[in-house]
Length: 209
Image 1 (cartoon, rainbow, N blue to C red):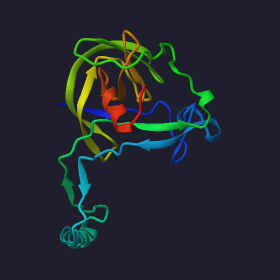
Image 2 (image 1 turned 180 degrees about the vertical axis):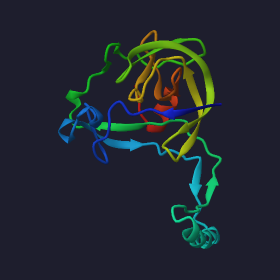
Image 3 (image 1 turned 45 degrees about the vertical axis):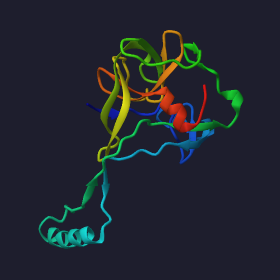
Image 4 (image 1 turned 60 degrees about the horizontal axis):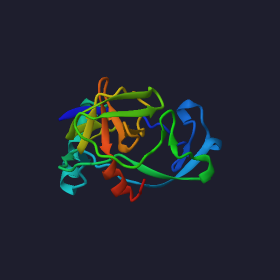
């Protein structure tokens, strides 16, 4: 099992359901919008705050005491959930189909869907690190990913590749040497990228390539 951290999206939201290119981090505004959120797969967290009345009552009593001796502290009860994600993805609908190309910058058109296997060479074109390539080092991996400073989630059936990636590359399509789509980059560390299997992305978002 690997613990890693989610990267920042390649195309960023500038509103609740609006996507812009360039993203807001790169100076984009609502006038640069290229698509609107169509649907997404909700992420399952590792823990959830307990809403049980008994636990809430206990927390209230303890917090009244803490307020007197440690005003900056607060007690909350959390339940550890045994649940796994398989993707971190969303689908956006272009505001104008003509502004979206059918190729990957620097890599060309997608030649269909391929299968990820240990040892194969893969590549991507990312917002931050550009075009990089590497090998798939593991498949069917379960990883714990930090979703924020306070939350994390477990992901199963993931792919690990020794592909250079940086914050901002998340959302990059992973291609094999035949330019077939094999995965979707969503997290990484200094030495490896974590990739959703493209078949899982397509199935859950109900899309085809």
